[in-house]
Length: 279
Length: 112
Image (cartoon, rainbow over all chains, first blue to last red; front, side, top):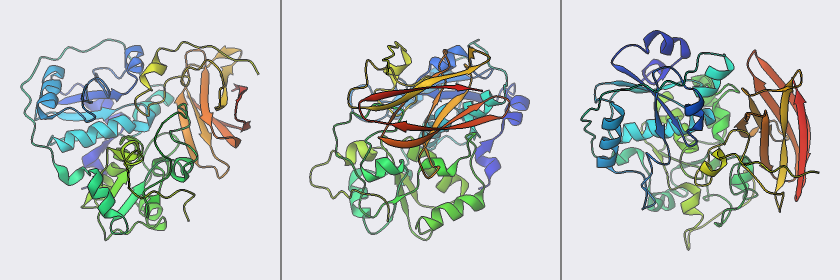
């Protein structure tokens, strides 16, 4: 797999967005950004309302995903280009989700909304109308999704990559520093996890670093490329960004995103926790 | 330090996830938080398109928010020294050293 299979740049979007087989999708937790202006032709997916189950602590099931994509006018054969704010965190989460449910052709816009804005490219408020489709999803591909018992079993055996900031890893902060620090669960990290913050994989403008720089980053942090890997963060979107780097850009074969992440692990009774900075 | 009351509806959306609301999450006081906030201006007017980033003493990224319509940003830091970086169209990138303290709101105006 090469970068062009999974990433596009802004020039590609401007040249191809009118292709009827290309669907641009902005994915955010705060969709007021889309409402104020988005790339022409883009539909929106609300990370919370559209992708999370309204009752259970889980994301929408296969039928829910089929309904969502059908309503958005996305077909199984469409090339879906995802982008969003927060350095593409939620877009990367959606990408993982599209892969989980078997969508064949999905890519990220490198740099996401931020790079587009910093380059002063066009944003519009017109909402496109796409005719509904009959989207068919596959069963979840759990080869790329980790659950809590797998994480406990991975301690000391697999690569565990904690992609949160060093302060969250150490247990000094319980959430990213742009949010109030008021979570109830314990702080710290899964024993034997390496701390490679998601941000180290990205440039200031949100684009991904080169493959060589990425291999050096994870290698120097102690990630063994010969072993399987589980990535986690607080709720699973920053680690979807790192899953994208390891699995899609670097082509590592067995990488799972633990979407329960620290919010689940740090609330489990009886599991081991380590506090303090990376050694 | 003054307390700025904001009513950004987008802040509500951040409660369940990790998203960074434009301008930063709304607050009604510092409480036990260590807050770094402020505005980015150009020629006296708020800069509405741009990003504020918080870096630790090692220069590593910690957090980022898109600027609000008033050019505002807000971070909930740990007490200590930080670098505030502002990115704006036109290749603008400016850094400012800031210090956060528990129970205080530290306010900065960044002129680009």
